[in-house]
View 1 (tube, one colour):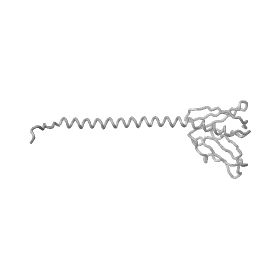
View 2 (cartoon, rainbow, N blue to C red):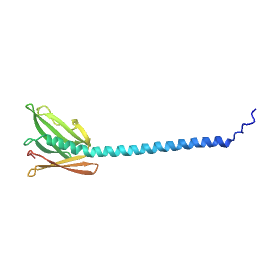
View 3 (tube, rainbow, N blue to C red):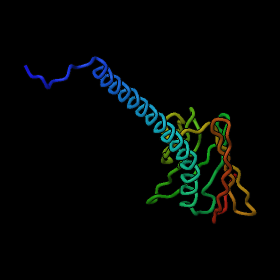
View 4 (cartoon, rainbow, N blue to C red):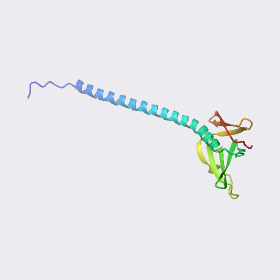
Length: 165
């Protein structure tokens, strides 16, 4: 037996165990706080993107079509439908922009007498409750009102072409 060995106290073992437990608790708290912060940032970014998608999409679709009488506005349910009529390689194509079932949608159809506009078949663009279009023919402005979750966004789009209502 060695005379230099000091007797071990249970307090030192308890101290190590307590230190390890505190490390585990603080690590768990840090992970939970980080996860919550990430969820909040991701949610805010998704909302910001949704707020920008619809106006950017509408501006690009309307400005891409610069033909006389290419736009037609009709009512659908509790909102409007914007029909953009274009000629692709001698074939007339209608693009419908509207809200249906909680989404802004786009439906592209050729002017075939056998095909009809079916709102449920449109491609979803982004979440949107309602959309309204108004054309100010004297100023060549299209006023678009977007309604999502009770919040409205007004978009003014300058058009070079004249329109039909």
